[in-house]
Length: 346
Image (tube, rainbow, N blue to C red; front, side, top):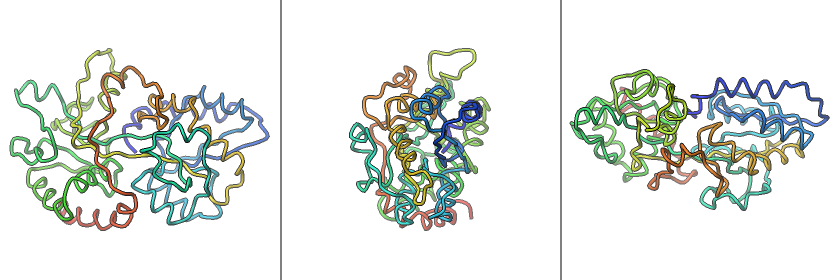
């Protein structure tokens, strides 16, 4: 996914320490996930101690790569639980029949809007919004108001100011493409991207280059004050600032957002199904959910979970996020990406 790579190296080191801490529990479970998964070592250790289950975390690239691997190894999976299937890939996972159903303990405390799989094959764990971020200082220095919506991005005033990620190679890039499709009629999004191309949008392969190199509001101090990133990016800028700051240097354009819901499921053929059910229950538990914002920089799925102060102040959830049915995304994703490529890159 992304912004979570912002803290991934440190979190992965802590996770590796926890998973190799010399524990000798007789039971174990393997969590297959994407490279951005993170959990605080004390939270993981507490689960292992209380459950008597050792947790092995197996990372396998981005969310799409992990799902592809799970489909290819269906029936003889590499692990017991898969974490990281989001609403853009859910229908594909369900159609491939890689999960077995399990209604997690605590699922009733998850926001109903996030429970998009009534069959309980995939359990919602967290959610986040991909949005256009703005460099507040860049616009303030020039006395220019930033764009207010997707349509404003086509204005010649904002020519050459936006950097986006390629939807064929990037999760936030795909989410932003879906945001433009969700806000348009059947073919309107194609004309939108033609006009965005003509307004000198810059396309890069992934979030790291877009945010940390090309975006003027990041550490890379690039030349573009508009970037496709996450609603939590402003909070991250404050929480990781050195020296400390009390005002976020970046902001969100809420009307440009697309909501991603991230889920976990028990893999069909899992060698440790009982332990897998316990792990899913843990991912929905209050203990894990409280850890989600600062470990993965997304919002917890469990309602009324307390958020860090920086989230409350600088990353309130957008109120106008776009969405599309998972089945519609699954049926059209490849065609949409192919058409986008023809319009923007060829």
